[in-house]
Length: 279
Image (cartoon, rainbow, N blue to C red):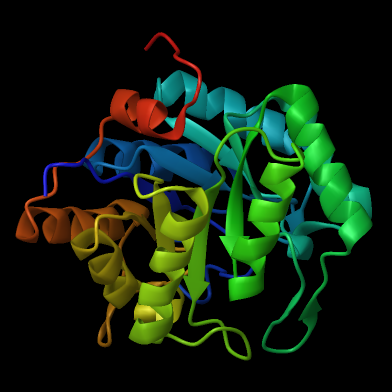
């Protein structure tokens, strides 16, 4: 396949700690350094969360601003995608950083079960997040934990609540949510192409030990891939991942296996319809 593969690196998340893996970057400075290495290894999107001084997840816009500024300085051209996920805040607090005008932001358009809680995404909150993204020119990445989330994204796009074609990411392997199932994965691809068109870009993320499998499924099927310490802290069963860059390198190796070129940040911006920037 000749179409370039976009690699997204989810650098930190809300859950992993240094007790899980010392390489997990917690401070803003650590996140910038870790992302720069991942960028140089081939990642063109940085999916970002921030932590407070105690290492706990937060939606603090000031911390997001510091991270965004550092990434733009040290990873020029890289797509900055901020998280509006529910572990970092409640209600509209989750979208308080959208006024920073990042390139992208994650958005879950429906609720789902997580290991010990319900990941609640109420319709009025979804509508507000989508409105803020339109106001500030932020492209949403639809995190689909369920088939219904893809269908809901189509409905929102048809109503103009999402501008342009949504970029859908299939999330598989979260306990109590969608398991890693190849038939379901293939049907997700079929659904995206049926609803949005055969050339619509999409992405996939596997959680924990499923990360590499989902990377391979996505890359071999013409999609784009997410990796990083947010989703998986191990290189394999016996070894912790030494860095985000090391996980990116595994995805790069799969791209080489399936003869997919790695998307540059310029190509990634073009594929996703994002604004051009100067490096």
